[in-house]
Amino acid sequence: MARTPRSAESGRSPDPRTSARLLAGLLGTAGVLHFVTPRPFDAIVPRSLPGRPRHWTRISGAAELALAAGLVAPRTRRASALATAVFLVAVLPANVRMARDWSRRPAPWAQIARARVPGQVPLVLWALHAARPDRRPARD
Image 1 (tube, rainbow, N blue to C red):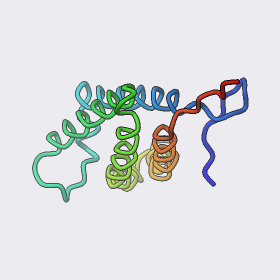
Image 2 (cartoon, rainbow, N blue to C red; image 1 turned 180 degrees about the vertical axis):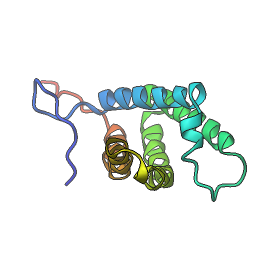
Image 3 (cartoon, helix red, strand yellow; image 1 turned 135 degrees about the vertical axis):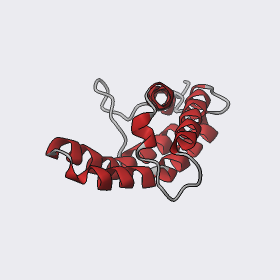
């Protein structure tokens, strides 16, 4: 069974709404970076995709911004969290390409690039956790 992050003070998994907000922050930051510093993202776009890499960088950045917005809106949180999980699986080929392309870089950079591939698994699990229904305290 997959484990989710635990809250330091209570020892319990964070509320799905909190998970969604934190994930939205991560996606929002990544989405902005796609537009502010697009070159690193252009470099990992799989060559098999048609068109220019910058086009795909912009599309994925816009997708991350849209997913982030959907995660913070209560009505769209669940659908956006599930779409985020799908998106994270879809960008896995870019992480594989980065790991392959960076294999000849200095060891710390090559290790970071390789770690991104299995690092997608906890991100997908995080998105699935954010899709869970809210835990409401029981009323007496």
